[in-house]
Length: 261
Image 1 (cartoon, rainbow, N blue to C red):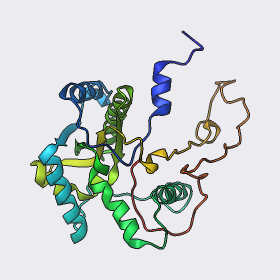
Image 2 (tube, rainbow, N blue to C red):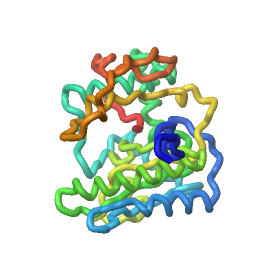
Image 3 (cartoon, rainbow, N blue to C red):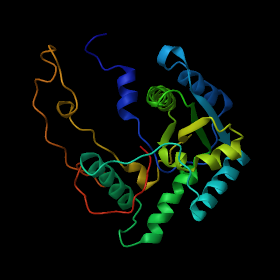
């Protein structure tokens, strides 16, 4: 009923991106249900442009090994450009990176430790399953990528609703050719990103990491919609151990890395 907290609100606001998973495999019924929920995502003109490949077991292990070899050889092959500019968005990315390293106990002066943390991305953070989201090259790709994003959000929220977890990883798209060759995916399908998923490890210190979101007043502009944002912006709460600091808190140059979203 209006005015009460819905189950969806609880799920959406409590969802997290873990960076360490238990090895426990999910049941076929759970994986099917998550895929079925994701399939209900909206898309432009109902094009449903997603092509999803899920790896588990021996296939998952073999692909992780191929990704690690590609990283060692420097064989990157992204289908899309990236970058965060040199302002606000870069600061937010750096703040997250600093917090991930801190939660893992990796010092800024430890390049080997930092690289090992990055390589854990390519081992799916220990998750027993990974889904790779491919898209056709339609127009400039922006609308299609938006469709894939909506599919992925359904996927992630469906996991959360079942007490499971997933983390979207753009770094997996950096090795698109490696993934395509391994999975036998045609070249015309482009790899946007992957999602590692399973059961989060509750004992992992890195999984205590909590990221904040900017206040609505900094991201929403209302037109003839009074009363929505007419409330004071609360000061940020004291940051617990492992929390991501306020955006922009750590702007020192860092090794560029992707740590999931």
